[in-house]
Amino acid sequence: MSEREAGRRDRLRATAAEAGLDAVLVTNLLNVRYLTGFTGSNGALLLRTDGGDLFGTDGRYTTQASTQVPDLELLVDRGTVSALAAAAVRRGAGRLGFESHDVTVDGLRGLERVLADAADGGTVPELVSIRRAVEALRAIKDDGEVEALRRACAVADRALAELAAEGALRPGRTELQVGHELDARMLILGAEAPSFESIVATGANSAIPHHRPDATVLRDGDFLKLDFGATVQGYHSDMTRTLVLGHAADWQQEVYALVAAAQAAGRAALAVGAEVTAVDAASRDLIVAAGHGDHFTHGLGHGVGLEIHEAPGISALGAGRLAAGMAVTVEPGVYLPGHGGVRIEDTLIVTDDEPELLTLTSKELLVL
Ligand code: ZN
Ligand code: ZN
Image 1 (cartoon, protein in one colour):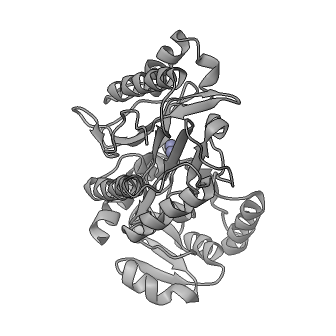
Image 2 (cartoon, rainbow, N blue to C red):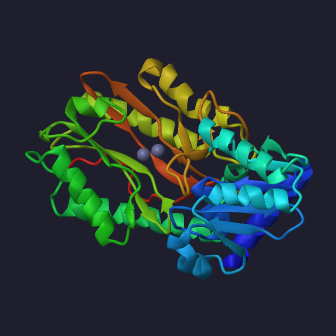
Image 3 (tube, rainbow, N blue to C red):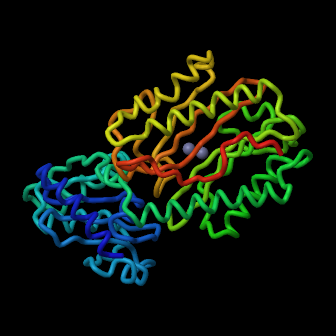
């Protein structure tokens, strides 16, 4: 356990050394978890380029820290981040990296004050943003993370299969009822929590990409769009399936076939070295060619892991290339306002070979 986190800290250490930093103050809680294994609600890490890392938390977590982070020197202080910053000064940091995307304006002013006070007339360390350096490391999953994602996806697959087999997805029920049952079933099957508030959207609501389930009643002949996932060991799965209740009309079959083809094209474009913009285009071009470009109103996909949305973003506005070990979604949609919409989403792992599909529920149009 701690060996895995030590390897991650060494990778960040190499990045920090390259940037000429003496130490890095990691404050984003998920990044702290990734680098130390600590799962409490207050923790921060002072990573030093020449080793001798310091983990900080407050008195509520002394016991938990000694269990989860046994290999690091522990600093217990209610002002955790300030105490770590002061420790960085005492240990002679001249250039201190910090996570500018995680620190508020007030937090930054406080940090500057602490550094000046701790320097006590001496040289005040320079604060240097490391940007999203830890998030960049997190984008590439190791075997343990991929296994957690596999399990999270399997829970979601099974929850949907069981509800469908039991007839829980039938006309007369409400979106909220279905959403609650989906969440409850995932918990029974071993999820720590749903990945996010499950999206259950039927009829015209299915044309709203992120519709919140409400009292709308499922009706015969309507689309039923379900976007949901399970969290296992902190890792999130993400899957969307769109079904039809009773019978599928021609227009529904047409829209579904188009989105399914675009989704397959997006999956096929997931290759090591592929530009994320090219992956988005591989899928989107089919939808544009069919005249529905204006009805596909979001990016193609996103990374998943300790967060439901993380690097890399796969969209026309994205930047960068895919690498082996990235966990991503492919989720094109066509939404016809006032009418109905289809989205099909899988979670996959980019590999040197074919991508590994983790969400295994069938993508044939299911008529219930
Ligand atoms: Zn989703
Ligand atoms: Zn998604």
